[in-house]
Image 1 (cartoon, rainbow, N blue to C red):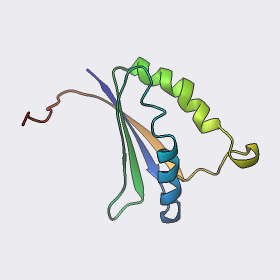
Image 2: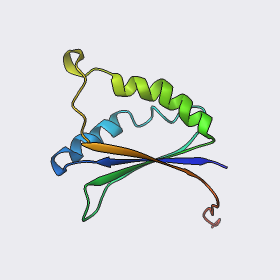
Image 3: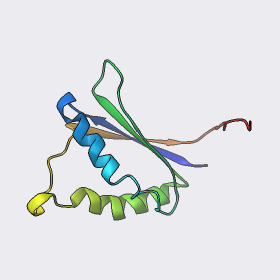
Length: 108
């Protein structure tokens, strides 16, 4: 079954818009990756400054290949003048899961 990676990002209120704009700007970049299944950026509603970046992959190897390839290049890319932009998040942690069970929507 698939694997799920959740990147837990601590994002100060003044950086939320920056984070969301950065994800929107490269939103389709992951979609063409071999083994990619799903992506969601989850915005906190109340009581926390934590965003969750949810991605689902066919297997661990697919995620690792993406992380060590195009994701690494995107995170090392330069901003204006070739300088890397300041991170929007002040902290991050990666959670890993295997899908043990799943239920899809019923057909209408």
